[in-house]
Structures are given as C-alpha cells and as structure tokens.
Length: 378
Image (cartoon, rainbow, N blue to C red):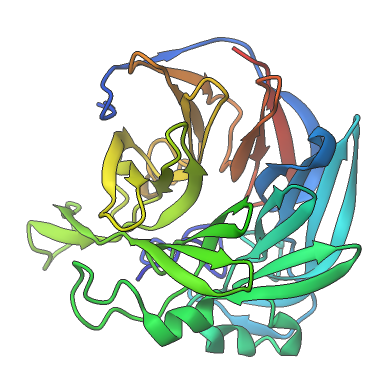
C-alpha cells in the first residue's frame, strides 16, 4: 500500500504515494480569478462548512521542536503541536482548535502530516488526523503526544475524544490484502478524507486503499476496497515489465444526489496523467467507475444541482514536478467546465457554500503561506 503524503520534503513520496468522464464530454475554461479570504495558514488541507455557514480549515501544522527523525528522503522531520483548525467567519479568521499533533520538515515546516480534514454532523465537529505512514508503530517514534495521528476526533467545547484508530484497524485487518492485489500487502494507513453523516462518519484511507465507516460507538467497518490496476510502466526505468500494478489511493468521499457514496482517487506510482477516477460505491456491491480521465484527485463534492466537482492537486501529474491544480465541474450534459486553475498550487480541499461559492485551500504543502480562495458561483 502506498502513502499519499510523505513524511518529509515537498509533498508526495513518489514511491509512497484526453479527459472524458463516464458521462463523456470535453473540458472548457471560464474566466475570472479567485479571491483570497484567508492567509498565513500552515499546510491547509480539508475544508468544511460548519454551523451558520462558517468555514473550518484543517491545518496540518508546521511540525515543531521534536522528537525528530530522518525522513525517507534523508532530511530531518520533527514533531510538534502546531496542527490546528481555523474558522473563517464574517471576514475574520481564527484558530479555534490548537495543539494538535504535526510532523513536518525541520527547516521550513513543509509537507506536514497532521489534521487533514474537518466535517460536521449538525453541531458536532469531527477532525481527521493523518498518519506518518505504516501502522500504529510509526507514530510511536514521536512520543506519547503523537497518539492522535491516524485517528478520528470529536471536538466539543474544547474536549477531544478519540472515536477510531485507523492504523490499528489496518494492522489488525489489512482489508486490501488479497483484494485484487498481490498477497502480502504491507500495513499502511493514511486516512485523508472525511464526511460526517448522522450516525456515521465516512473515511477514505489513502494508504489502506479502502472506504471505512465509523459508527456512533466508534466501531470501524469496511464499506469498499479499491484494488490496484495494471497501467503502462513509465519509460526510462530499466527492469520494469510493460505493465505494473498501480495503487488506487482513495483521497475523498462525498454523497451523491442518488444517495450513493462517491470516492475520488489520487492514484499511486506512476501517477499517470488522466489515470484518476471517481468511483460510485453502494455498500454490499463492488465499486463502479462513475467518471474517469482525471489526474491526482485530492477532493470531490456535489453542488445543490447534483453536479460533480473534482479538485486535482497536480493537473500535469505528480511526476511532472508541477503542482498546478485544477477545479473541474462535470455538468449535467456530461461536458466539463474548468472553474479554476491559474493560481492554484497544490490545493488541499474545497467546500461548496449554500450560495454556490466554492472555497479552496491553496498552497496546501507550505507552512505560513497557505490560503483559502473563494471562487464565485458560475
């Protein structure tokens, strides 16, 4: 299983992590630039709507003073409690939850692992914590303060309650082992997408390649597993067969107008341009491809008209080194409209407000330079 977010460096560990949808149709672009409504954020990722229409942003933080360890690229990464949730309300921004665990590059705080998503069910706030990779033992190297990594938290009046532990669930069950994959899949959990629903929380585990459900008592169950698929091997790498298995890496989940669950995938190595898909999931049935031809999906959502929106973290593919993102709307007739691309750098998530405005977290792998952008209704 491959990780979505690497523990050090830029964002994605490359070995750890002609567009037409199933509905058909080419893309078209529209003009107009986004408006900055929040700035100075640390590695902003998921964003959700809270009570009264306030926006809440999961900041993965900027690490801290330690404990530290050597990351997979040979640079030093350090633990701290700089993870936070920021509220944007009536023109102001304020960190309303602080002190959450974060691990990031020691030098500049980039590519942090920490809070990755936030979602509400009524007035109940839930926060999803990313995991530095592997199973529960990986977080232990950062000390007892890192115990929240890979967990779902419920936050109420300043109190934090652990509801689920996804690395431990992965270590005990490893759901994608043998699910169309070679036997012996490694233990790897990196929860990334959260959707809170009445009585249940839905979580995509990008490392575990599955969609999980957490019930009101905190029990975890598997709703779907996304197996790897064969894709052409990248050129220039000796010893590879013509095709290699590519991990699914599901990053996001939404509920469609038909009540089914929809899951977007980043894809794993070799991260082919146009290789990412959106799956339709009905519990008890195998996932079905709903839309295809995207690249490195980081978030999805439906608007009030039932139109699918897809956010790409790197439109030209992660291997290109270009982290220009793109927000695409799939129209009811199957055509596509590019709502934003210029100015998007490694976007981390988006939310659609009641008036149709779209709020996107930008510079999602940078400390101190993160933003929230508003894209007006179109």
